[in-house]
Length: 518
Image (cartoon, rainbow, N blue to C red; front, side):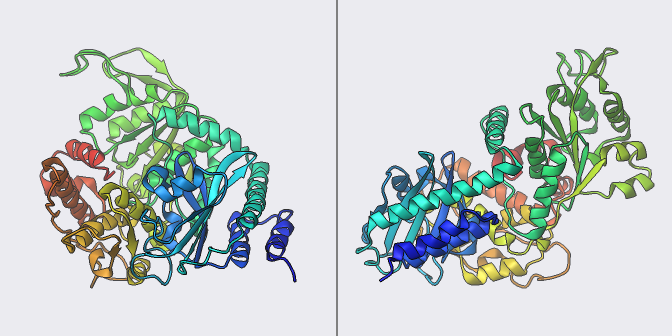
């Protein structure tokens, strides 16, 4: 009789010499594993710092690929990576399972089941792990763990082959070092991810890599909420300037009188309140990049001074005649049609042409297909950790609703909608359930159009006051709901939100950053 381990390993050995896309290589790996050890769900996860990132899954909800599992928050995964050999959890283990509610075909808690995990080591360094789950609590009782250990060795060779092939196109280790430098420059916060697997998203990433390696000025365009700031971060990280800082400025978040000072700095006494001199964003970004968000909002006098910096690298602080030279790459973004603004006389034509040397269009969420579910999974995991929940999932009907909605507010709208849905779903329970399931009604999209354009008016629930929750947390939750609702009504236009809420635009921007809304 043919050895089942041999049957599972032969296709993987054959694949080692093939130039396959990563997703296909990993899919074949999991398929071979399920042939060796039949089970209901299997996943391959890569360890990045202290976070496990799913690269391929079978038998799990599609939004699992968008989730990020922090080790300190998932004890089962933490235990698996602490042992070199496979780990099997007893069926009655009360440790929370990261896949609660995510196994396809299971509509309630993932209660008594069999769970197995095996770490993957590449060149004696922990790379990630493989997990297996079976709804049959005795499925893995007779498993030869030595076979699984042997399989994991070939699985490690598979992932190493994949990474070696990728290295031919780009030096992965150099990128890791650049990412660490960028992380330190950003005050400990690593670069945020651009999550997606759709064809249009992959094309965007290819363009980012192409233009990132060039010195060109980039103008990022796209609808409100598509993630233009994340694209700017990715461009900077791909560039030779990645070891230097990326300095960001929202040109619409400041009063007109302060924009020039923020960009170019000022000297002591330059204006009322200037009690000391200070450097502007351009000087802080010297040697690196500057990201000018909502650049179409710049007042005309500042546009002319920005043009001078682009042309010669020379700037003057407000109130000074002394010139400073800076070497800065400009990455700008706008949701306006700047060509139309030029025709209307509201934006300088010469500045527009200088900024749009390489125009980069970020696709709207409605064109990205099932990326919606990956992004929803990412936001669900964020909310699960923030709200202290054991497990958080989307029902199958809720997934269909998300896929059918046109997303006029794009990724930002999805992020806010998931946060509101979690609050609304929680309010329906007197006690926190083991698994909180988001049903279609919690999404608040009932009766809203599933095609076309236009911003629906979504009124979020008032935050539920729960015993043990402090005043500050309750007030923060209420402010978050108010701001998110206003953003949904005004398609993410912060100036209109500030007017509706009767608050200063700059104060609203600071509050939103503190609450994690922007």
